[in-house]
Length: 376
Image (cartoon, rainbow, N blue to C red):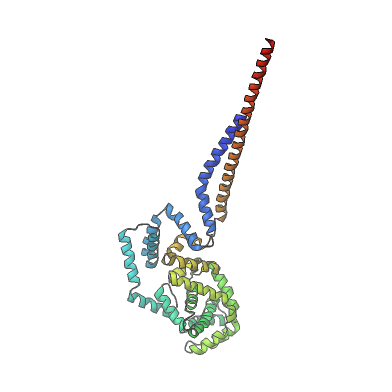
């Protein structure tokens, strides 16, 4: 029976050891991901390693798709990511990307996109954003947007109050930009980009709801309606002054912080990187994480966001599953240690019992010998 107990203990040790070996890689990855959940760069790289381990061709596939869509910036971001991860790409592919980037950065293309951004107020690359920001710095863009949406508001029609609020905030920031000689330029660019993302439907639903609440708090609607009713693009100075008076600067801290983070993403990951961020962000914390990611990853940011989505910014889901891997590994380790303890105890007990049996046997043999001698 006791030998059976020892065999059972040894079997438990073996099974627990096999479980520990099988669970360890998963548990190690889960622990690293959970530890990095507040560090977007480390978190995204851990998840990228997992994705690329299963399929390295995903980078080449995304480069082809980006080139087909005319997005040379995204294709170049994937080339940078491939270089960082030591993944080789065909020479023909890298040549096509380089040519597309050169074409996108040409003077003719830049001038065309700059003019489009200046006139329409919509940005999707560096050139068009430059035009948009230029228009907003000269208050033309913000006044145009406020008057357009404000007229709808005055006439009782549907108006985009978020665009109204962002444009009003933009006018206030523009004044600060001139006073500080460009010191708040990134904030100005960030506000323009958030406003443009809203106009073209590239502002995440959660972030749009948050921004809508923020702009309602910082805009005095009756005063804005009065400014719109008497305003005109032909009188930009007077109109801008009246609109700025409807803006509650003291309540704009959170919105300005958001714009600053958007500006930081733009500086490191480009305009389209910022637009990609605004599309997946659910709240300002997501944008702040994106700014940290962009600071660490630079031109690779767009490729990372394309592959991982919001998962590049935070551990949005799967935390419970990761915790289960860790729990399972800990249980297997506990079982392994417990089995070793039980095996050691039973082996020791078996040795002690064996020693006792030997001593008892010797004692009986000695007693039998003594009895035999006495009878003789």
